[in-house]
Amino acid sequence: MKTLKDIELRGRRILVRFDFNVPLNESGQITNAKRLTAALPTITRILNAGGRLVIMSHLGRPNGKPSNSLTLRPVLKWLSEKINRSISFSKEITGPKAVQASKALKNGEVLVLENIRFDSREETGDVSFAKELSELGDVYINDAFGTAHREHASTSIIARYFKGCCAFGDVMFKEIDNVNKVLSSKNGPKIAIVGGAKVSSKIIILKSLIDSVDELIICGGMAFTFIKALGGQIGDSICEADKIDIANSILEAAEGKGVKIHLPTDVLAAKDFSSSAQTKYCDIYEIPEGWQGLDAGKETIEYFSGVIESAKTLLWNGPLGVFELEPFSHGTRIIGEKIAKETKRGLFSLVGGGDSVAAVEQFKLSQDMSYVSTGGGAMLEFLEGKSLPGIQAILSNN
Figure: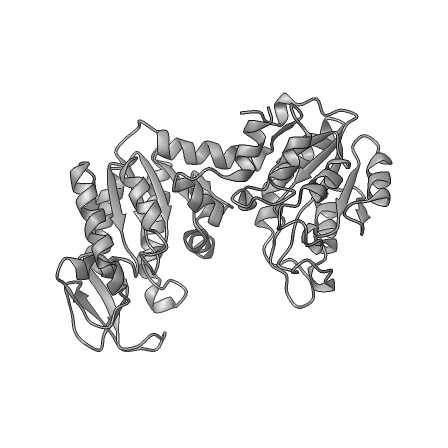
């Protein structure tokens, strides 16, 4: 796997695709800079080595048209302050002016291109657009794991114009390396916690994990479809009735491969979906009509905590309940704290998937995990065993 350390950087234009799709407030200020912070090692490595850095990224969904609210200028300002140097900006993404700006760079200087999705050809994977982008660099680096599952011009197609001169950045390498640590690790017991609202969004990942883990905790809203499949009474809890057969097939597949499935035993149920709702603890197989399970119960939290204690390698994808509402955040928070505690004792813990990442950030546990993915959808597809275009493009052109 070719990375930055394998590339001669000094005096060369290093064209890097980052994922700087960060949230902005109404004033255009960045409200969460996690993805920018994650990119700093790649940026500083290139600049310290005397590279001439050309940055491209998308921001939001401008639908192929320029938008003042989605300009990359706030990103430029943030980066300039962090690396303590001035940064050039090109309104033109490709063309003579952009090429000239890239060629005017000196060693250790930076050029940021405007939002790459202002050109509609980016998301269609247009070959001519990829060719135009390639004229801006001597070396191509993909450090945008969050878009690695997209076959876009700047994330995949462009690599064909840099045969032998393309590599992964630090973020991409860490993401790939840490997912592989979970999927390929021989250090067991290896346990995955998969939660979230719907079975339908996790079918492929559940089937894939059965081939690579020793034990599987199924929790959150999706657990009710499994409980229903096992004959439980789940009241008004979320359930995908058309996925009951799939739930049964997953349970049967796990049993056939000797993978132990852990399901909740009790829940904190509520009369309605609100933070002020009347609540009570129920056996998960006997939830009364008119009540819905919104968080893991006390027994479940204790049970899952014991399972986590035995783990040597752990993947966490999805919360245990509606953690966004404070009365139903307890299960997710306590399990997060348990994983953090065991990580300090030697557990390798990977947190991946939007909601679980949001949860560890909300409970200020990110620094206590072995690795927290920035990937979102790309992370899920990677765990599902899919070939990601952004990764395959680098591997195929070296």
